Length: 190
Length: 268
Image (cartoon, rainbow over all chains, first blue to last red; front, side):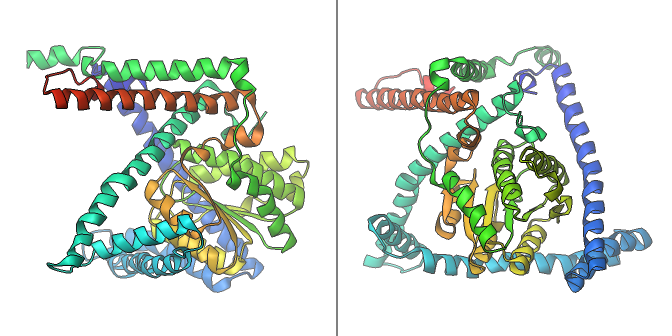
């Protein structure tokens, strides 16, 4: 896979496509393992009497969607699509919306001037927050370019430095796996 | 059409030759460093997040509450970040086995679940407590991002783990999980390869593995000389990259000041 990236030859392209196809097939089979695992875990928990309402809800969802798809199909207007659009998507949006409250609570807890670094963080966060607001013309509108400068210079420099470290870490981890030095993920450290 | 047929028959895309040369050089540096005995005996600096693993599992044991470890929604088993998190999972599982502490591992990917089951089973066996291993505690919850986040939040809210490990590739669900863990009073150790989510973890968690600290965990925890040497190879590569960056900056700035045309060799 590494070598085929550098080659436009049809054989290299075919190897790449074949590997990706096999990966998708394996992922689909693994999904069956996952679904069976979910059903089994929740059924056993239900029999044991733990969190019955939650487990019943999970089992109902796991069984209902395939049954709806099998009986009425997955075309527009079908019960399957209705469940997706009016049950699943709103639930996902609800969980996503929690982020707004969690950002506020994390900021309230994290942005406190305990020491010099924390004070710098607090001041920086305040400037960035102010730069996102609209003050029109005047002195307060200067926050806009100050915030942009902070994002494009010191923040970006630190971010790129971390990205370089992450890239190098990913590279050496991948090489260790390929060379067989790293075998932990196989379930054996020896 | 003939030109494109000729182009497709090439074994090597010459436009990508600099990338190939660079990749081979980097691989050679890592390989040679891994084989070098003096580098193998090098010491790694203290990483607070990794030092806190044993304390975190001990805390959970004393409080009779479980440990929760989750690899995030953003990646699958082929990502180096997920493999790096498996290395830490081995250590956490080993300690959980010794201390007889429940280890929970919810994940979004059935392949990761299967690998994690093997890793944890092996860790429990190596620790001498194979009977304490519970496969049902390592489970697949949902492939949907917020389905996964809701499921893990539910587990945290109901089971109230004393220690939470958020190690892997995370997306928007990172702060949801971290804040929920904070509400139950858990000590949290986090690490991810996403610079955006790192900011959330630094604010919300007790310990954060920043950047390559997550990838250094394998060598740090195991002490394996070859792995430690590969971590040191990363430092060598960082020096090489820094030299190239400084040289390119000076070269480009000088050319701009003197207003001369020059080969932009750094743009390969």
